[in-house]
Amino acid sequence: MKLIDQLKSKYSEISYLHSAAALMAWDMRTCIPLKGAEMRAEALGYISTLAFRKSVSEEVGALLGQLNENKVQEELTEDEKAMVRVASKSYKRAKAIPPELHQKYSVLTSNSEKVWEKARKENDFNSLEPYLEEIVELSREMARLYGFEDNPYDALLEGFEEGMTARKLRKIIEPLKSDLIPFIKKIVEEGELADASLLEGRFNRRAQEKLSRKVLKLIGYDFDAGRLDETVHPFTIGIGVNDVRVTTKYTSCEFTPSLFGSIHEGGHAIYEQGLPISLKETPLYGACSLGIHESQSRMMENMVGRSREFLSFFYPQIQKAYPSNFKNVPLDEFYRSVNNVKPSLIRIE
Image: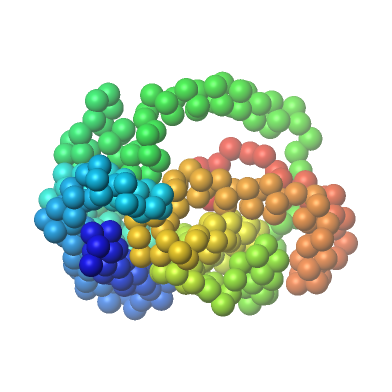
């Protein structure tokens, strides 16, 4: 067997474990019995760490060493060269973290999410605080192990946005802050604010789900390669090829969080459903960056979903779902309301 085929075989095993871990994580965040969460966190940590150990094994390291030799590189296709390049960088980065630390962090973050759900509901930060403190402490430890030149956050950013640093981010964010903060203040103080109260009322959960399914189909989400479920905090998760699942959140007093949450997650999912299957079970199968990923969801949610053009088409469906709420509300009023601008501490809304 050729060296590159040996590497592909190793990554097939790793991808199967990642798929199992993703399915466990999806279940934990959607429908696991409350009492089963603690044991699931341990099992998820074990499976995740098993994949991690395989990815930093001596066999994988040796294969990458041979595949990076000039003579071998000459025989590889462009995709295979990219595979070796990406795998080598990931291997070097992951090798810095002891598997025991990886497992500890995985179990901790899984457990903390269930604590957060309860704390959020009861407005009880104190119960979450020790988990948050430990997560921050372990993140600092991992940043130290990864290594950095300027800022410890750079070491963590690399895992989400390759090549990005805190210094580069400031160059992007500071000009935006200097323009947007005064602009929002001016809108709030001097602008003619939309009537957001017309979005409030009583909204049947089943009707919200029907609307979410309709809008997901319209924007191109493939239900034969995914599903829609309910959760506390909306997310999208790729279980594997042709299995990319979305979630949303239903509230009885507003339907817009579920609708626009579904469109947002649908944007994420369409991106993943469109990944080239030819690259499956390789280091290249996945989002090229979290920035690109979020650009797809935000574009679909705000530039498409909140646009006058899309709402001109979809608003009749909303009126049909909630005739007592919107039958006599003109499109222009609804359009202004869903584009209302105000500062908020709730990121997803």
